[in-house]
Picture (cartoon, chains in turn yellow, orange):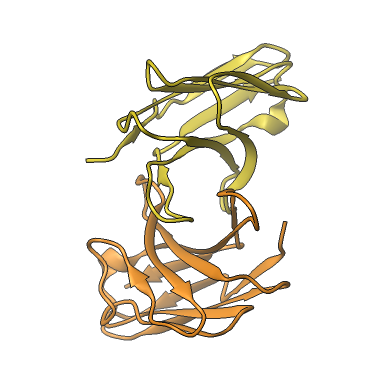
Amino acid sequence: QKEVEQNSGPLSVPEGAIASLNCTYSDRGSQSFFWYRQYSGKSPELIMFIYSNGDKEDGRFTAQLNKASQYVSLLIRDSQPSDSATYLCAVNMGGSQGNLIFGKGTKLSVKP
Amino acid sequence: SAVISQKPSRDICQRGTSLTIQCQVDSQVTMMFWYRQQPGQSLTLIATANQGSEATYESGFVIDKFPISRPNLTFSTLTVSNMSPEDSSIYLCSVAGIVDEKLFFGSGTQLSVL
């Protein structure tokens, strides 16, 4: 069974803090990893992707990948109330193009 | 990324009826994907729609329930047939990037079945 696991939250952090979102996946051979942000009532929006072990930074966002531990995380620095959303982790586990396995998402709340 | 338009954005339907969801992309794409997001559940791929061939369905989804059309490289429809309350969900159209696996989603259709 191909699975992506995330804590459902809610994860609550104060404004300006670092939010850390975590994800584990079941298929050791997975190669592509994605983070989507989904505001309530809206469709998912791609915010980060990572293919290699290590860190990848883009503005306030850092994606971290550890294939040996089958673990991927998203750090959001200087969290803002506008970051409050559900964050979805998605993994391509060797399926056809477009066939991503999604976690259920972690709800993040950033308090002013 | 492509601009992906879906309609309707939401609908309330009676059980036993069918609803067709339309997806329009502003550029030509080889493959279009239909996902479902049930309440409290993860996004799940229903099928892949290729222009000029039958859609490829994922395990647990069948053509009789979710017929798909793909008449050209910018348009696709998904029909939810003989609906039941269990079909209440968000349905999302998506396309992949040209050279990689990044998925981009349309605005979604919120379906409620009474």
